[in-house]
Amino acid sequence: MILKYEVTDRDDGKAVRHILKNRLEISGKLITKLRNEGKILKNNAFVRTIDIVRTGDIITAEIDFEEESPNVIPQMIDIDIIYEDESIIVLNKQPGIIIHPTCSQPYGTIANALMHHYAGKGLSIKVRPVSRLDKDTSGLIVFAKNQYVQNHLVRQMNDKTFKKQYLGIVHGNFENDRGTICLPIARNPDSIIERIVSEDGAPSITNYAVLAQFKNASLLQFELETGRTHQIRVHCRAISHPLIGDTLYGKPEPGLINRQALHSHKVEFIHPETGNLLKLAARLPDDMLNLINMLK
Image (cartoon, rainbow, N blue to C red):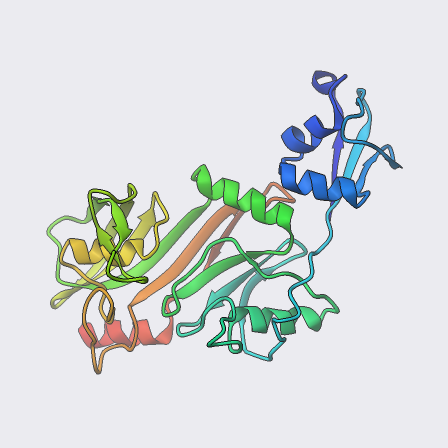
């Protein structure tokens, strides 16, 4: 990936580092890495980050793929690719699969599948998820192919320009078509997994809209203003409308669905390389569609 910037009058006399950080939006850590690797050029010649630039100079930064750990073994696993280019890949994740290998589960993960996918292109790229989904949550998940793209997308998430929309099926019905849940979330001190609503927790805001209502169940659309672990699941339980199938924050639903009925439906963000707005969507999976049909 090649980033270029032509110096204008406003930056005349500034240091190369200023251009890299403020115009190309490269993090300090990555600037140091590129400097050490000799990947920063001015007018096609190697340059120091402290050197001065003049109007019309062309500053170039070459960002390579970073190889994945050899501990992640490529494995042929079907993945649903919604979008891919040289910078990012967006998958429609199936429920029941985790992102990275663990000591207890070294295979059968998204990372194993992506390593196999990249190997088919002659690449070994570090798996860099920009957002995360719980094991049993389905839907869109975005991966960056290098550190620059990951940093750029994380900044968008922090400044709320990276939009995510979820669909979920919950117990109960609603009087109002829309609502906002504003309850702080903290880790349950008695569990390494479970989260709870607590005055000592981090501020957490979930907006929801009711799309359809069935007998004692509703289809909701969620948009998050914060990104806490299990946020939608915790907030739904807190308002007495737990997600159907959520065994951690609700109860098992034999015969209905074998996991929490939650799906990452849409994402929207500015492409770090092109600057274009990218909007992507993934339809509801079959198990949630079947659940809706049973509830009608």
